[in-house]
Amino acid sequence: MTKNIIPLEKELSFSRFDLMSEKYPDNTAVLYLGEHFTYKHLKNLSQRFAGGLRQLGVQKGDKVLLYIPNCIQWVVAYLGIQKAGAVLVPVSPIYTSHEIEYMINNSGAQTIICMDTNFGYVKEIFASTNLKQAIVTNLVDLLPAWKRGLGLLFDKVPNGRVDYDDKILSFKSILKAEPLKEDVKINPATDLSYILYTGGTTGFPKGVPGNHIGSTSYINDVTNDVAGDHLKEGTDVYIAVNPLFHIMALGFFMAIGLNKGNMVVLMPQPQVDAILESIERYKVRWLLGVPALYRMILENDRLGQYDMSSLVYCFCGGDVLPGKVMNRFKEKYDLPIYQVYGSTEVGHVTYSKIGTPPTSGSIGYPLESRECIVVDPVTLECVEDGENGELFVTSPYALQEYYEKPDETEKTYVKVNNKIYCRMGDYVSCKPDGELVYMERSADVIKHKGYRVSASEIEAALQDHPTVINACVIGIPDEKVGERIKAIVVLKEDARGVGGVELIRWCSERLASYKVPGYVEFRDMLPKSKVGKLLRREVRDDERRKMSKETRSA
Image 1 (tube, rainbow, N blue to C red):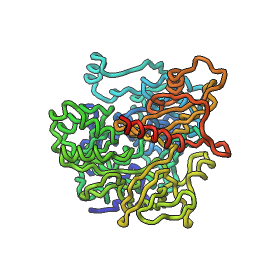
Image 2: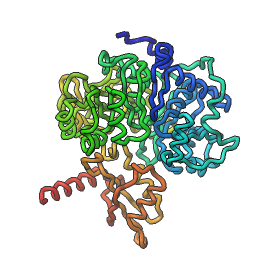
Image 3: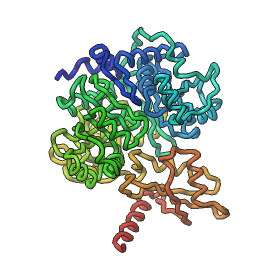
Image 4: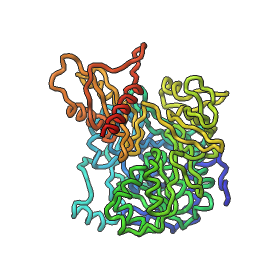
């Protein structure tokens, strides 16, 4: 296998896609809602979108916020933004106006791409942000007219009302532009490719800037070293279930799909029956999911109706896969589920080795472009193999900062042995052969339905409520969703009539649905250190002790 088609220091995030478009122009690049988009067609659409952005005044380095779910427009916009030399800012399509207002202002985005169904949130904050224009689309915009008509006729396609004007434009109108054919001069090492947002320890999300070489470094590792000869060029099939705004999903999408001339079956929603039917119909060989997806597959009542024999390579990320789920899947399909580990700050970090049965709790081996050490979180001294410590990661290709947040940067990026490492907040042990085994995570990080949720962000939202004087948010272990989100709240003495329902509603208006606490407990006080810092880990450990006691009593 040829490992370096293009020298890494010269490679852009879309370079290999362009090569595959020339080599396999008539291959299906993306299959979306039954419609085949070939490499040639997808490249043309992305160049037209880049040309349309240029006509709107979007220049190299400008930020474009992408606020839509998995659909073919996401892929077109992603490639078009990159080709125009602009900076992609992908966010969850279920974020509220409160969340996207902050991200727009922090990133400096002046253009947003949204759905007609979440345009209402954009309209709410248009005047209070830097936005100059919004590009609005619908899930079926790029499908044939007869499919769009049937979907609308049978009320299968959600849609919202949009009043178009010179600042509110349709996605399809942008595609009427002439393709952008001149090459934009981009430096892969210094020019930004994206800004991704992750939870902040101060209550506000942190923007993680990424250059082109940073993302291509780990994508190439996955393509060449992890998949290697197991991946067929031009004939393989991968099903994309996870949201593309997540770094894990986007990296796998490019590594297994578009960078190798393969077909990606793009799912707009993670509906289990639709996923299983697509695996059978399109002979899917590669699957990436979160633990909840594999659990839902195994618990599906109609599982026996689908032929899953084409599946060969199954990967799991977003959280550590429970051994029970791993074993049940192996018994059912005689297939291992390989583990993926990474973060927004450093990209993909570790993978299981294909052909080596993964063990429960393992998060795999570091990629070639990532260096991992396990340290004592207090002394920052490396621990011995087999001992528990915090995982630190570095890469010569990754940017080591948060966007416009020097204080947050200083807390997370630290110098060890003359190198800058990112503190992962996860605690692991290292085997003599380099395999990393997950032990536990930081008390601030909650893994809920595959999402990495910041407890501090939820606490900040709760403390904005006029009756709340303190809040502590923790994760409670749960087999189905990883961890349930619980809020423990202290109210003002004169608070009257405020209950858990109101506080949950308050959070729902300010946070994406996956961040909203499942239930609320009220207390008179919360434990704090001598300097007034909330002892979240102490609260979490106390809750787990109570759960353990209740389980033994039962």
